[in-house]
Image 1: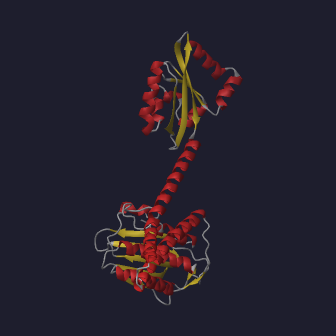
Image 2: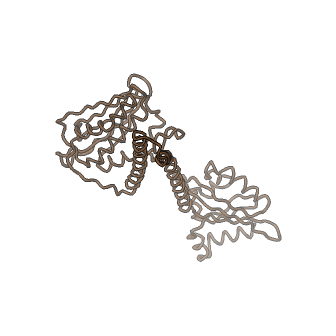
Image 3: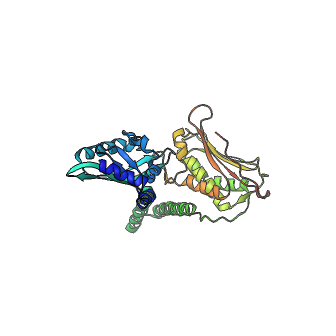
Length: 378
C-alpha cells in the first residue's frame, strides 16, 4: 500500500505526462484501499457523481448511487472486495444537479506477493447508450402495441365480412337478406377504412406532415352537418344532440374537412361513453382573442387520474373492453394544434356539474394574426 500511495503522490505532484493523462482521461479513474474505500479520484470521477474524494470516503460514495441501485451495487462491491475478486456493474449516479448519470464501473485487484494491496477501477459514462437503448425499447413496445391494436380492431369487421361472404355464397338468401348482408359488409369495410385513415393521420401528425387547406369556415353550418351525421347513432343510443352557436358567428380560419374531423371525433367519443338519456352539447362563441369551441356532455365524468393521459395515442381507460383504437383525441389535438389552437379537457365525476367538456380554440378568419386563446390556469 505504501508503494501505491507513493505512486499516487507522484501522479498528483510530479510526472507531468502521467498527471496530464490521468486528468484528461475520458474515463473516471479510482483507486481504493484493500477494504474498498476510495483513496484517489481523477477529475472525471467527480464530474460523473459530483462527490469530492473526502465526501466519498468511509462509504460516502454510496450516497451518490441511485436509491434503486444502491443496495445491489454496495453489497456486490463489498462482497468482491472481501474475496479479492474483480467487479463490474452498470448502474446510476444521482448527480447533485439532479441529473441521472449511467455508468459502467469496473474494478480489478492489485496484488503484491499474492496479497491484495489495493483496487483500481474505471467509470465510463454510458448515459447516451442507455438512453438510446431505452428509446429503442419504447419504440419496440409502441410497435407491438400498434400491431396488437390493429389486429384487435380489424378482427371484428373482417369476421363480419367473412361471414357475410359465406352467406352470400350459399345463394339461399332472399333479396332482403342479401341486402342486409351487403349493408353489414359495407359497415365493416367502413370501420376498417376509418381505422387505417386514423393510423395514417396519427403518423402524419407525429411527423409534422399534416397538410391543411385554409379557408373561411362557417362553424354554424359545419356543426350542423356533423350533428346530422351522428343523428342516427344518437337516436340508437337514446342520446340528445344539441347545438349552441349563432348563425352570425364570425367564420373560423382553418381546414373545413379537418375541423369536421375534430368535431366528429369528439362527438363520437361522447356518444360511446354516455348512458341512455344523456346529452351532448356543441357550442362555439367569440371569446377574447379567438373562437372558443366546446363539446360537452352530462355523463359520469372522467377520473382526475386519467385526465393527463387522455391525449396519449392508443391509451384506453379500460383496455379490456377497448372502445375504439384510442386515436380520436390525439388526432383532434394534432389538428387543433396544427391550426395554432389549444385543446384541453375539463371533467367532474360528482356534484351538479358532473360531466366532461373538451374545449379548443381557433383563430377568426376575419382577424389576421389573432392569437389562440390559452386554456384557463388551474
